[in-house]
Length: 462
Image (cartoon, rainbow, N blue to C red; front, top):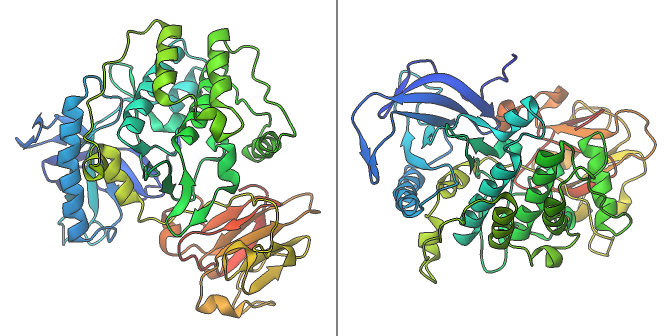
C-alpha cells in the first residue's frame, strides 16, 4: 500500500521524553503520528503513563517556550477532567513535550503530543466493510463523545469518519481536534477550513471576522447526520458522484431549491434522527442538541444510558478551556494557517466580486472582492515577471479570490501557489496537495492568514 509522504520524518528508535518512536501511523498537513513505547518509569497526574502511545510530531518553530508551558498546564488539567469521566469518548492526551536534539536540526525544537493510541479509524472500517453491523452502536458512542465535548463548551468542527478513532475494545472515540473551537456565548470562532461533505449549509456564507468564522454546536449535529447516513446506508445523503457535485446539491438544498431525499435503506428510527440532524437551518437543528440525540440513539440501539457528566463550575471558562485534550491539540495546530473558500451571500454594496470578468480568475487585495484586483483568463506561472503582472502582491497578501470560470468544459477549478512556476514554498511543502489553496468553479470568498500567492493554474478538481 502506498504511504503518503511524512510531514515530519522521525527515525525509528528516536527517543523523546519517556518514549521511543516505532513505526509511522499516519501523516497530514500539520504533523506526523508515530507509534511509541515507553522506555522509562514515568507518571502523570492520573497514575502511570501507558506502555504504548501515539506521538504526534509537529514541525519545528510552531511553539514558543511560553506557549509550550501553557500546553503542558492544559494537559495536566485535561487528565483531571478525564479522571472524572466514567466513560470517556474523547482521545486523551498524556503530555506535551519539546524535542531537544541539536544533532538533528530538522527535529530540534519540534513539539510532540503524547496521545492515547487507537487501533484504527471509522474511515478504514467503512472502506473495508460498508454498512458495518456495529454501525448503530458506534454512532451512539460518537453521540456520547459529542455530548461530552459540547457539555465542556467546545465544538469539534470536523466530524467525519477519519476523525472517529476505534480502540482495542472496538469502541469509538473522537479525535483530531485541530479545528475545535471554544464557545463564547452562543458562538465559537474557528478557522475557515472544513471538510465540504460535512459542512453545514449556514457555513457556506457565515460571517467572518478577525477572530475567524462563526460556528455553533448545530454544525457538529449536521456533520453527525451526514456521518450516520453514510454508516447506515453506505451512501452520502446529498446526491453527486464528487465532492463538488455534492456541494452544488447542498447549495440547492440550502437555498430551498431542492428537498432532502434520504436513502430508503436508512432504518426508520434512524431516518427520524438523521432528518432532524440535516434540517436546513441552524434554528431547526438547534432543537436537537447532542444530549437529546444521545438519548434517542440509546433508545434505538438499546444501549444503557450514559453516565451523568461531571458538573462544570459556571463562569470558569479557563477551567473549561483546559478540560479536554482537544484544547491542546487545537492550540498547537491552529498555528498552521488553513484556508477554505465560502460561497458568498447575495451581492451587496460591500462586495466587489462583480468586477471579475466571466471566464477569469481574480485575486483581490481586500476581503469580499474589494481593493486592487488582478485577473487572468489563463494560467500564470509567475505573477511578478509573467505576461501579466500583479505588482501589489510583492508587498501585500491576497485577501479574497473569485473563480469566475463559467464556460470552460475542463480544468474548471483554480489552484494557487506561494512560489513561482507553481512551486510550493513554506508551509505548502507540508501539504499533501503542495499548494496554498484551491477554489472551485463559480466560488468566491475570503482567505484567512497572510497568503501571498505568486502563481496559479487551472486544474480539473480541487
